Length: 107
Length: 194
Image (cartoon, rainbow over all chains, first blue to last red; front, side, top):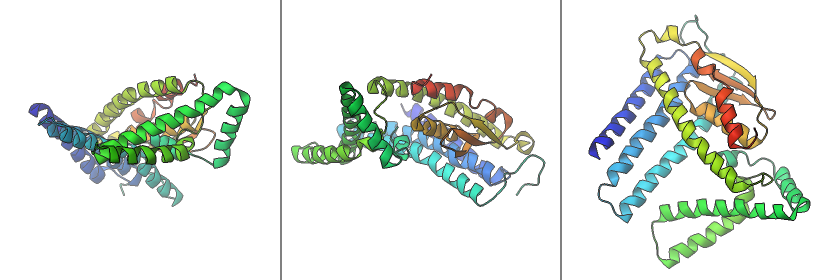
């Protein structure tokens, strides 16, 4: 059980790190949104599942409810994250920002 | 599922139009109106119980009353097209789509993580805007498709028109090429539009 929790948490942290590094390394606004919007989502999914499992250590109704609430957070993030990402991209397009293409200088 | 439905709530006119149609066309279709209500109610009551965490009669009955009122008022917003035959099989098909989507999300996440940590990342990525027209019909299917594209890393939906014209920003060729392809086919299957 503890091993599974640790694995999940570390995998989640790995994806979070990937997201942060991606935001720094990618060349422009649109491509930065790829790691920012989605590696975070999977990182959050893995680490929160890990926390929900850890919370079930002492199995009782109270801890079960807390775990269910943690899972609800995951559900809401999965619904909200793509919508927010889409809204940001849409704002960029409306403002007239052209996407970076291969061969240009990084912005 | 709820979010797509919420976004998809659309103009009131069409929703009422559907109800009218279903009640006139066939008395059996009237029954289909009850399913959205029951499903909305079950979802809401589940969330109520989880969030309140109290199981005495007072709190449960409060939940029952408020969930019934809200479900009655908004079930036609959540599921705006009760005309689809067989509401429950529809839900079951949609539930089968979720695990496939999760698998795609994980695979695509690994791909983007590989790109992020690659030392020569700038040579590997090749951002582009892809345009295509989807064969999907219903609004709900289109919104699900758009959100699924955004959820799988390497692709973000920039724009969807009501006719199914998609503009997608893809981070490299490998991410963009599979579209619309398998994902569209799976969503068509999930919404019974094969």
